[in-house]
Image 1 (cartoon, one colour):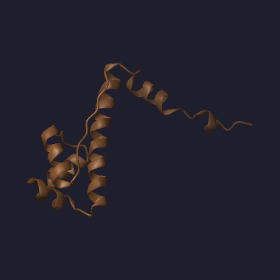
Image 2 (image 1 turned 90 degrees about the vertical axis):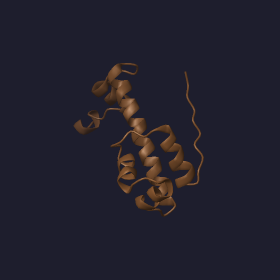
Image 3 (image 1 turned 120 degrees about the vertical axis):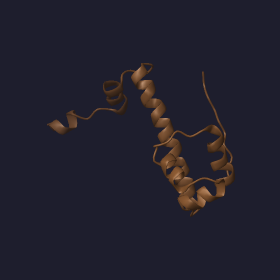
Image 4 (image 1 turned 60 degrees about the vertical axis):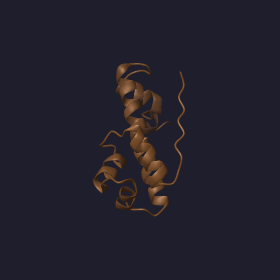
Length: 102
């Protein structure tokens, strides 16, 4: 016998289709852009923590404020490409590689 909760399970793409529209629609594209920005903040935070740096440590390395690093990590601030490159290169000692598809 199938439990009602089991029949209520929806896969992730169907959930996104219902909430934001199908892929390629303006609502879905806006969601996708926001999600990518969110991922950048998470990646910065994970790299910072892996190096045992505080937000203040990272901010000092790149000449900005702890508050700005916090806003980036929490997806509350757009980040310029030059700033992202500085965070990765000077702050975290890494290298930024970009890819895109058409």
